[in-house]
Image 1 (cartoon, rainbow, N blue to C red):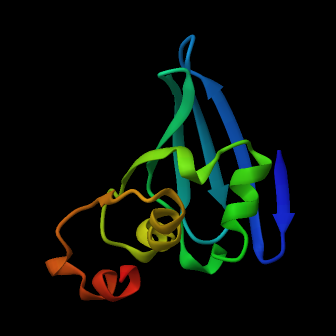
Image 2: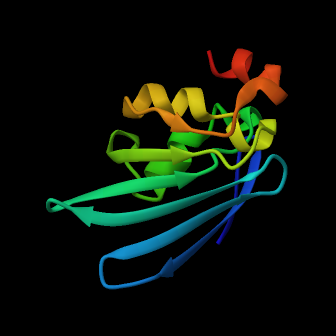
Length: 118
């Protein structure tokens, strides 16, 4: 499914990895991708994100997640693979929504990451 939401043009790809585990890929035309593992834990669907996408999608990310039945409050973990803005750009928004912290590479090599997240 390819969708245009305001400035954000993206494609959603879903894959069932097991009985209770699925992978949702949000592929933005511009500004990084987000990979979301969804799984059952204590009878509740939880999520782990690999990367968070570019901040240029800050006005649409919560709507995109909601349309795809991904509740930000159910995010358990966010893993940032490396310190490029298209990988960490939405971490601060998703951390505020979920109340969770992100795991990321050391920020000493990317001072802009520290200022973008805090």
